Image (spheres, rainbow, N blue to C red):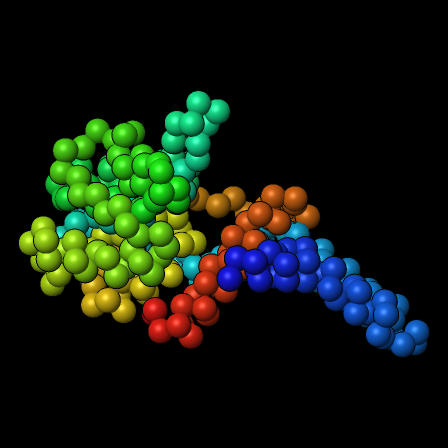
Length: 239
């Protein structure tokens, strides 16, 4: 799936494909008009307001009062690790952000903290084992076999049984905001009751959100990857 996304859907490649089609397949009378339309679309796609609208369905919060509900555990799916020049493994920045927020939430509600992430290198440590090294929390449960979102949701089932966790209570999910929807849908498919813990930061809206910003390219690609992932998971029966 990643290869398809990289070659076809990663922004600004869709604009590039449209330009190629327009240049070689559209007749001369309509070519200038088509190019103008493509440039307008390109401009819109580079604005922060477009990025916000694109990600909103993924990151939308229910504004839920987390204090009124009981939970079985906090789940943090890892988001990658890397090896340095000394062949030592370290968690990625996304893994650190997820794990530290999950630790804070687990401490607040006095819950087991599940760190889920398998090996990307069979000779090295798993992602979960690497992430645990940066945490200072005793009530930890490590799931070190999962290599993707679907496997995490599936393997958490067995982990719940082994640790006598109550599946009738909500599982509190702590992950990257854009990843939360696909992860929550995958868990619900496995019979879990899920609440997404989304840390909401205030967004400033001014005239700059209507101006092109190079940072939107990365933001748009992350959103597109999640949408494609959700569609792929739907047809595979994972959600």
